Image 1: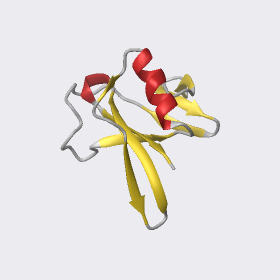
Image 2 (image 1 turned 30 degrees about the horizontal axis):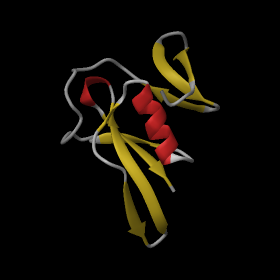
Image 3 (image 1 turned 135 degrees about the horizontal axis):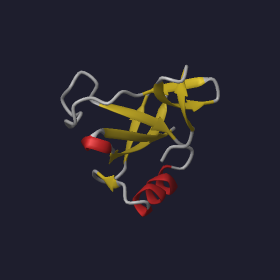
Image 4 (image 1 turned 120 degrees about the horizontal axis):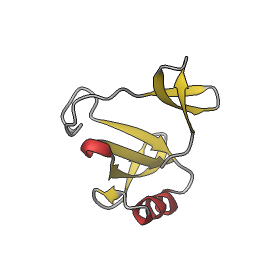
Length: 94
């Protein structure tokens, strides 16, 4: 849903490759991520509202309305969607 190329690292480990950056995944227990050591993962986008609309059109469940947050370094616009096994995924526009 967030692009990249689905490949195997060294022919063994499942991953998604974004240019020179790898995101590796391994099947684990299917439990929601909220409250665990890694509470959620995040993706930066250039158009939050557009990306959320695209994801919802593909059947991805949103978990609340997008919000604005003012920081010393500027304002961010963010929202959350639910991934596989109720994994929280933050979508951020800066």
